[in-house]
Length: 145
Image (cartoon, rainbow, N blue to C red):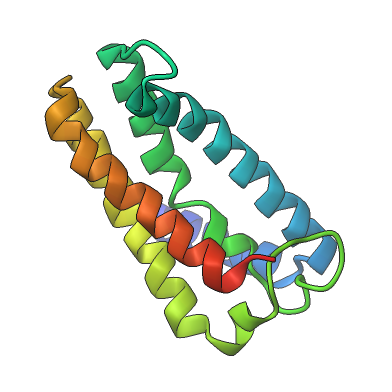
């Protein structure tokens, strides 16, 4: 009974908090998450391009971090948060289904990258890395200025 009350209270607080997010807050949240994504993705991209020595342990850790981060941005895409201080296009609202599909692909592909990165085998990692990069590019092409 006590657990149910706590769960209900947490759900109410979470719903209230999300419902009260202002567009500026959403934009700032997205920026923060995507800066963290870039922080993780940049070094692994450099490893795959040969600009940085490949380090399997570092790659694996960054891929794990990227997979965790991939689940975070969507909640920051709220109505009215696409006009100022952002490169996210208002077409996100107009084509929400496609956008959320691409975000789902991002989550799926980063998780697959994290799994294969555990092998430390650059040859096995490369196709999964390319899938993540393609997903990012597809979303940016359609929904980012």
